[in-house]
Image 1 (cartoon, rainbow over the protein chains, first blue to last red):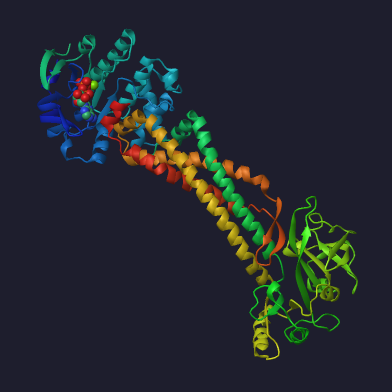
Image 2: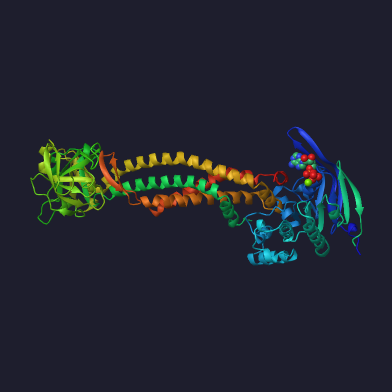
Length: 237
Length: 389
Ligand SMILES: Nc1ncnc2c1ncn2[C@@H]1O[C@H](COP(=O)(O)OP(=O)(O)O)[C@@H](O)[C@H]1O
Ligand SMILES: [Mg+2]
């Protein structure tokens, strides 16, 4: 069995600092942070609220840029990209899973999942096929015409996951994906994310407060006061 | 790259109360715009339709309207003898002097309201020169009698103008022996009587104008040159239709200016409504916008989408406004023709072009009202907007 942590890194952070500025007050969040994530790895980030976990996800996914340091993801040095290039990078390489699903309420499940494909050159037929395929993966092909308000929280999150994988990105970032769910739905979502990692080879970086969620990961990192500490490392079962 | 149109439409439906209120404001603006243009159009159409392209009207040199013109009997005779003037079957020139005065008449059903009406002293053979005009009821004028014909837009609007009624003007009573139909032109708002009976009654010696048939409209220039060269006359011919067209331009312009001023004031209010609605939309969809940006939609897609939404919103208003204005099409109204200070009856005329302008205006209002909110949406920083959600 391959040691995934030893594979080629898909994410490399070197000396990364992030300081937010509120008016004249500087809020340092991350300082001189180093991090490597191997392709195919499932990494969990834990830590107290406000420690900067979401900030790391934002830097890794090209939503935000560091104050200092280098971020290289999927071979792309994000430091050199302008906003348009970052948007294109996100569309191509990153699938997002949010705590509160962030589905567009006025669009059906199908249309929500189709959104990322509108940024590709695929025609309507091809888009339709891709959407149906991923709805099948998340087990919701019978709900494609439902609006988000007609779905349960767990179903909404599954639609969101379908949207995250429909354009086949190599990296999934999930920010507390089970934070709004009951235990049963949370377990389903974690199973699904685990499957995407194992069967579809997606690299997963997941922020979570839930120790049971962290159990699914190959590696758990704790972030506290700007320092990352490795808490758990296990070989893939 | 474009977000689906359904996304915008459904958002408008979800916020239907706000959508309808905003669209209602736009609808009022568009309705007033359409009505203003329809009024000016109807007015122009009425006066433009007045007069023939092969008739010339001769006024005193320098006079800009019949009201300000006077022409002596000698001048009229000299002009009528010109070779450019066509002749009738009897070999006589088709040229008729006319006299126009304004008479203040009471409106029917309202003893306090009165308006100036154009009263024209014509030749008993007036239809020979104006074959498009026909007798509608009653009979023709008899020479030398105290009789009048009334245009079809006046008989029901003014006291004493109905067939068989008696009008008092110029110190005399005139019996209405007929009504005529001038095909919706300005003549429909005139009263005609025998010129030779009118002259003494209204204390006139000279005519106001001479209307003549040209053998060929192209010979107008020859006629003009000869009249200018002739020291005995001071008279200036122009094509009759052109004369009325110029007369109409002034008032049509005033209607447009006043109406458009109202439109601009209202449009400012309506744009604020749209602006407000779109800012509210952008505000309440913060997280949605952040999500779309995170998925990789470029800011210009977000900008375009909110602009489209604003335009759709205002276009709904535009369509409503046109529907609101449509029933007024064909409704007749009267206004004072400032060029002659006389009452002219005309209709609101809504044309496809005017409706297109109304819809276009609503699109422009949508773009103006939507631009700043759309730009604000497109400029959001994803990380901040996601947190704000
Ligand atoms: N856009 C921002 N502007 C200002 N401060 C921010 C911003 N984003 C995050 N922060 C601050 O940075 C710190 C870390 O935030 P975050 O990464 O969201 O923490 P976590 O996800 O671990 O709860 C917090 O103190 C937060 O207030
Ligand atoms: Mg967070």
